[in-house]
Length: 319
Image (cartoon, rainbow, N blue to C red; front, side, top):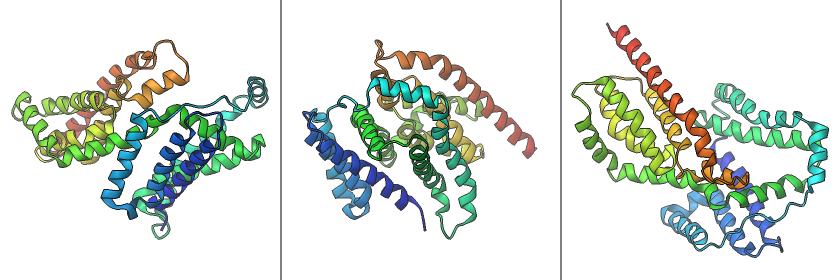
Protein backbone atom coordinates (compact mmCIF):
# COMPACT_ATOMS: atom_id res chain seq x y z
CA UNK A 1 0.00 0.00 0.00
CA UNK A 2 1.31 3.43 -0.99
CA UNK A 3 1.30 5.86 1.92
CA UNK A 4 3.73 7.83 4.03
CA UNK A 5 6.49 5.36 3.15
CA UNK A 6 6.45 6.77 -0.40
CA UNK A 7 6.54 10.37 0.87
CA UNK A 8 9.40 9.64 3.27
CA UNK A 9 11.37 7.83 0.56
CA UNK A 10 11.16 10.73 -1.90
CA UNK A 11 11.95 13.23 0.86
CA UNK A 12 14.91 11.13 1.97
CA UNK A 13 16.31 11.07 -1.57
CA UNK A 14 15.90 14.83 -1.85
CA UNK A 15 17.72 15.60 1.39
CA UNK A 16 20.42 13.06 0.57
CA UNK A 17 21.02 14.80 -2.78
CA UNK A 18 21.27 18.16 -0.99
CA UNK A 19 23.75 16.70 1.48
CA UNK A 20 26.11 15.20 -1.10
CA UNK A 21 25.92 18.15 -3.48
CA UNK A 22 26.78 20.44 -0.58
CA UNK A 23 29.69 18.23 0.43
CA UNK A 24 31.35 18.64 -2.97
CA UNK A 25 30.81 22.41 -3.03
CA UNK A 26 34.40 23.51 -2.52
CA UNK A 27 33.40 27.18 -2.44
CA UNK A 28 31.49 26.69 0.82
CA UNK A 29 33.47 27.15 4.01
CA UNK A 30 30.99 25.04 6.01
CA UNK A 31 30.21 22.29 3.55
CA UNK A 32 30.71 19.56 6.17
CA UNK A 33 28.14 21.16 8.46
CA UNK A 34 25.64 21.34 5.59
CA UNK A 35 26.38 17.74 4.67
CA UNK A 36 25.84 16.40 8.19
CA UNK A 37 22.69 18.46 8.77
CA UNK A 38 20.86 17.41 5.60
CA UNK A 39 22.34 13.93 5.87
CA UNK A 40 20.84 13.48 9.35
CA UNK A 41 17.49 14.71 8.06
CA UNK A 42 17.71 12.23 5.20
CA UNK A 43 18.50 9.45 7.68
CA UNK A 44 15.41 10.33 9.70
CA UNK A 45 13.28 10.00 6.55
CA UNK A 46 14.76 6.65 5.55
CA UNK A 47 15.12 5.00 8.96
CA UNK A 48 13.11 7.03 11.47
CA UNK A 49 10.97 4.04 12.48
CA UNK A 50 14.02 1.85 13.01
CA UNK A 51 15.86 4.43 15.12
CA UNK A 52 13.15 4.51 17.77
CA UNK A 53 12.31 7.34 20.13
CA UNK A 54 15.77 7.55 21.71
CA UNK A 55 17.58 7.44 18.37
CA UNK A 56 15.34 10.10 16.86
CA UNK A 57 15.82 12.24 19.96
CA UNK A 58 19.60 12.06 19.59
CA UNK A 59 19.24 12.87 15.88
CA UNK A 60 17.16 15.96 16.68
CA UNK A 61 19.73 17.10 19.25
CA UNK A 62 22.38 16.72 16.55
CA UNK A 63 20.38 18.94 14.19
CA UNK A 64 19.91 21.54 16.91
CA UNK A 65 23.62 21.49 17.78
CA UNK A 66 24.69 21.99 14.17
CA UNK A 67 22.29 24.90 13.67
CA UNK A 68 22.94 26.38 17.12
CA UNK A 69 26.71 26.48 16.71
CA UNK A 70 26.42 28.16 13.31
CA UNK A 71 27.81 25.26 11.32
CA UNK A 72 25.42 25.89 8.43
CA UNK A 73 26.13 28.30 5.61
CA UNK A 74 23.92 29.89 2.99
CA UNK A 75 24.16 29.30 -0.77
CA UNK A 76 27.12 29.92 -2.99
CA UNK A 77 26.91 31.95 -6.20
CA UNK A 78 24.53 30.38 -8.70
CA UNK A 79 26.04 28.55 -11.64
CA UNK A 80 23.33 30.10 -13.82
CA UNK A 81 24.17 33.65 -14.86
CA UNK A 82 21.77 36.58 -14.78
CA UNK A 83 21.80 36.85 -18.57
CA UNK A 84 20.84 33.20 -18.94
CA UNK A 85 17.99 33.60 -16.46
CA UNK A 86 16.67 36.65 -18.31
CA UNK A 87 16.89 34.81 -21.62
CA UNK A 88 14.92 31.84 -20.26
CA UNK A 89 12.31 34.14 -18.70
CA UNK A 90 11.83 35.97 -21.99
CA UNK A 91 11.59 32.69 -23.93
CA UNK A 92 9.09 30.84 -21.76
CA UNK A 93 7.29 33.75 -20.09
CA UNK A 94 4.34 33.00 -17.82
CA UNK A 95 4.18 29.41 -19.05
CA UNK A 96 6.77 28.67 -16.36
CA UNK A 97 4.00 29.06 -13.79
CA UNK A 98 2.03 26.27 -15.45
CA UNK A 99 4.71 23.80 -14.36
CA UNK A 100 4.32 24.91 -10.75
CA UNK A 101 0.52 24.66 -11.00
CA UNK A 102 0.86 20.97 -11.87
CA UNK A 103 1.67 20.32 -8.21
CA UNK A 104 -1.56 21.61 -6.58
CA UNK A 105 -3.63 20.29 -9.49
CA UNK A 106 -2.23 16.79 -9.01
CA UNK A 107 -2.69 17.02 -5.24
CA UNK A 108 -6.36 17.99 -5.66
CA UNK A 109 -7.11 15.39 -8.33
CA UNK A 110 -5.24 12.61 -6.52
CA UNK A 111 -6.99 13.34 -3.23
CA UNK A 112 -10.35 12.50 -4.79
CA UNK A 113 -9.18 9.82 -7.22
CA UNK A 114 -6.87 7.71 -5.04
CA UNK A 115 -9.53 7.28 -2.37
CA UNK A 116 -11.35 5.07 -4.86
CA UNK A 117 -8.49 2.55 -4.67
CA UNK A 118 -8.11 1.70 -0.95
CA UNK A 119 -6.14 -1.44 -1.79
CA UNK A 120 -3.36 0.56 -3.47
CA UNK A 121 -3.38 3.81 -1.48
CA UNK A 122 -3.62 4.63 2.20
CA UNK A 123 -6.87 6.58 2.42
CA UNK A 124 -5.59 8.74 5.27
CA UNK A 125 -2.50 9.86 3.36
CA UNK A 126 -3.76 10.31 -0.20
CA UNK A 127 -3.25 14.10 -0.11
CA UNK A 128 0.42 13.84 0.87
CA UNK A 129 0.97 11.05 -1.66
CA UNK A 130 -0.72 13.13 -4.36
CA UNK A 131 1.33 16.19 -3.45
CA UNK A 132 4.58 14.22 -3.68
CA UNK A 133 3.50 12.69 -6.97
CA UNK A 134 2.67 16.18 -8.24
CA UNK A 135 6.21 17.35 -7.51
CA UNK A 136 7.65 14.41 -9.48
CA UNK A 137 5.31 15.01 -12.43
CA UNK A 138 6.11 18.75 -12.45
CA UNK A 139 9.83 17.91 -12.42
CA UNK A 140 9.43 15.61 -15.43
CA UNK A 141 7.39 18.21 -17.32
CA UNK A 142 10.01 20.82 -16.50
CA UNK A 143 12.75 18.62 -17.95
CA UNK A 144 10.75 18.02 -21.15
CA UNK A 145 9.78 21.66 -21.64
CA UNK A 146 12.94 23.47 -20.54
CA UNK A 147 15.41 20.78 -21.65
CA UNK A 148 17.74 21.67 -18.80
CA UNK A 149 20.63 19.46 -17.65
CA UNK A 150 19.55 16.83 -15.12
CA UNK A 151 21.63 18.33 -12.31
CA UNK A 152 20.20 21.85 -12.61
CA UNK A 153 17.04 21.33 -10.50
CA UNK A 154 18.99 19.40 -7.88
CA UNK A 155 21.72 22.02 -7.65
CA UNK A 156 19.30 24.95 -7.59
CA UNK A 157 17.14 23.14 -5.06
CA UNK A 158 20.18 22.60 -2.90
CA UNK A 159 21.03 26.31 -3.09
CA UNK A 160 17.47 27.26 -2.12
CA UNK A 161 17.31 24.93 0.86
CA UNK A 162 20.74 26.14 2.01
CA UNK A 163 19.30 29.67 1.89
CA UNK A 164 16.43 28.65 4.14
CA UNK A 165 18.74 26.60 6.36
CA UNK A 166 17.46 25.29 9.70
CA UNK A 167 14.15 27.13 9.25
CA UNK A 168 13.19 24.53 6.64
CA UNK A 169 12.42 22.03 9.40
CA UNK A 170 10.98 24.55 11.86
CA UNK A 171 7.32 23.58 11.17
CA UNK A 172 8.01 19.92 11.99
CA UNK A 173 9.90 20.87 15.14
CA UNK A 174 7.15 23.18 16.36
CA UNK A 175 4.43 20.67 15.54
CA UNK A 176 6.29 18.11 17.63
CA UNK A 177 6.57 20.66 20.43
CA UNK A 178 2.81 21.17 20.31
CA UNK A 179 2.27 17.43 20.69
CA UNK A 180 4.65 17.39 23.68
CA UNK A 181 2.74 20.28 25.27
CA UNK A 182 -0.54 18.43 24.76
CA UNK A 183 0.82 15.25 26.39
CA UNK A 184 2.23 17.30 29.26
CA UNK A 185 -1.24 18.63 30.06
CA UNK A 186 -0.68 22.22 28.97
CA UNK A 187 -4.07 22.14 27.27
CA UNK A 188 -5.78 21.47 30.59
CA UNK A 189 -4.01 24.39 32.24
CA UNK A 190 -4.90 26.73 29.37
CA UNK A 191 -8.47 25.43 29.48
CA UNK A 192 -8.80 26.25 33.19
CA UNK A 193 -7.58 29.79 32.55
CA UNK A 194 -9.84 30.23 29.52
CA UNK A 195 -12.91 28.97 31.38
CA UNK A 196 -12.56 31.87 33.79
CA UNK A 197 -12.82 34.31 30.86
CA UNK A 198 -15.78 32.58 29.16
CA UNK A 199 -19.26 33.32 30.56
CA UNK A 200 -20.96 30.12 31.67
CA UNK A 201 -22.84 28.52 28.79
CA UNK A 202 -21.78 31.15 26.24
CA UNK A 203 -21.27 29.62 22.80
CA UNK A 204 -20.15 32.92 21.29
CA UNK A 205 -17.66 33.42 24.12
CA UNK A 206 -16.19 29.94 23.59
CA UNK A 207 -15.86 30.58 19.84
CA UNK A 208 -14.11 33.92 20.35
CA UNK A 209 -11.68 32.55 22.94
CA UNK A 210 -10.93 29.52 20.76
CA UNK A 211 -10.34 31.57 17.59
CA UNK A 212 -8.41 34.40 19.19
CA UNK A 213 -6.50 31.92 21.35
CA UNK A 214 -5.44 29.95 18.27
CA UNK A 215 -4.19 33.12 16.58
CA UNK A 216 -2.34 34.43 19.64
CA UNK A 217 -0.83 31.07 20.64
CA UNK A 218 0.30 30.57 17.05
CA UNK A 219 2.02 33.96 17.13
CA UNK A 220 3.87 32.85 20.26
CA UNK A 221 4.73 29.35 19.00
CA UNK A 222 5.32 30.39 15.40
CA UNK A 223 3.24 27.58 13.92
CA UNK A 224 -0.45 26.71 13.92
CA UNK A 225 0.35 22.99 14.12
CA UNK A 226 2.06 23.62 17.45
CA UNK A 227 -0.82 25.67 18.84
CA UNK A 228 -3.61 23.39 17.66
CA UNK A 229 -3.16 20.39 20.03
CA UNK A 230 -3.13 22.72 23.03
CA UNK A 231 -6.14 24.85 22.06
CA UNK A 232 -8.11 21.86 20.84
CA UNK A 233 -7.64 20.09 24.16
CA UNK A 234 -8.34 23.28 26.12
CA UNK A 235 -11.37 24.76 24.31
CA UNK A 236 -12.48 22.88 21.22
CA UNK A 237 -13.09 19.42 22.64
CA UNK A 238 -14.48 20.13 26.14
CA UNK A 239 -16.63 23.12 25.14
CA UNK A 240 -17.36 23.39 21.43
CA UNK A 241 -17.62 19.66 20.74
CA UNK A 242 -18.60 18.00 24.02
CA UNK A 243 -20.76 20.73 25.54
CA UNK A 244 -22.20 22.44 22.46
CA UNK A 245 -22.10 19.36 20.16
CA UNK A 246 -20.25 21.14 17.36
CA UNK A 247 -18.96 19.42 14.22
CA UNK A 248 -15.33 18.39 14.96
CA UNK A 249 -14.28 18.77 11.30
CA UNK A 250 -15.59 22.34 11.05
CA UNK A 251 -14.16 23.30 14.43
CA UNK A 252 -10.72 21.92 13.57
CA UNK A 253 -10.68 23.59 10.14
CA UNK A 254 -11.71 27.02 11.44
CA UNK A 255 -9.26 26.75 14.33
CA UNK A 256 -6.36 26.02 12.00
CA UNK A 257 -7.34 28.93 9.74
CA UNK A 258 -7.37 31.23 12.77
CA UNK A 259 -3.92 29.93 13.61
CA UNK A 260 -2.70 30.61 10.09
CA UNK A 261 -3.78 34.25 10.51
CA UNK A 262 -1.53 34.35 13.55
CA UNK A 263 1.28 32.89 11.46
CA UNK A 264 1.01 35.79 9.02
CA UNK A 265 1.66 38.28 11.83
CA UNK A 266 4.45 36.60 13.80
CA UNK A 267 8.24 36.86 13.46
CA UNK A 268 8.34 33.52 15.29
CA UNK A 269 7.17 31.95 12.01
CA UNK A 270 10.66 32.55 10.70
CA UNK A 271 10.43 30.16 7.75
CA UNK A 272 7.33 31.96 6.45
CA UNK A 273 8.08 35.57 7.30
CA UNK A 274 11.76 36.22 7.98
CA UNK A 275 13.35 33.85 5.48
CA UNK A 276 11.43 35.30 2.49
CA UNK A 277 12.59 38.76 3.53
CA UNK A 278 16.19 37.52 3.38
CA UNK A 279 15.71 35.73 0.06
CA UNK A 280 14.09 38.82 -1.47
CA UNK A 281 16.81 41.02 0.05
CA UNK A 282 14.28 43.35 1.68
CA UNK A 283 15.69 46.23 3.71
CA UNK A 284 13.02 45.71 6.36
CA UNK A 285 13.26 42.18 7.78
CA UNK A 286 9.66 42.49 9.00
CA UNK A 287 8.44 43.75 5.63
CA UNK A 288 6.61 40.50 4.83
CA UNK A 289 4.75 40.59 8.16
CA UNK A 290 3.71 44.24 7.71
CA UNK A 291 2.38 43.46 4.23
CA UNK A 292 0.34 40.50 5.51
CA UNK A 293 -1.30 42.11 8.55
CA UNK A 294 -3.83 43.92 6.34
CA UNK A 295 -4.93 40.52 5.02
CA UNK A 296 -4.76 38.53 8.24
CA UNK A 297 -6.95 40.75 10.44
CA UNK A 298 -10.03 41.06 8.19
CA UNK A 299 -9.74 37.43 7.14
CA UNK A 300 -9.74 36.32 10.77
CA UNK A 301 -12.86 38.41 11.37
CA UNK A 302 -14.55 36.78 8.37
CA UNK A 303 -13.80 33.31 9.78
CA UNK A 304 -15.45 34.12 13.09
CA UNK A 305 -18.59 35.29 11.27
CA UNK A 306 -18.57 32.15 9.15
CA UNK A 307 -18.27 29.90 12.17
CA UNK A 308 -21.04 31.75 14.00
CA UNK A 309 -23.25 31.16 10.94
CA UNK A 310 -22.41 27.45 10.99
CA UNK A 311 -23.29 27.25 14.70
CA UNK A 312 -26.60 29.07 14.06
CA UNK A 313 -27.52 26.65 11.28
CA UNK A 314 -26.64 23.67 13.48
CA UNK A 315 -28.84 24.99 16.30
CA UNK A 316 -31.65 25.70 13.79
CA UNK A 317 -31.54 22.09 12.57
CA UNK A 318 -31.73 20.76 16.13
CA UNK A 319 -34.91 22.73 16.82
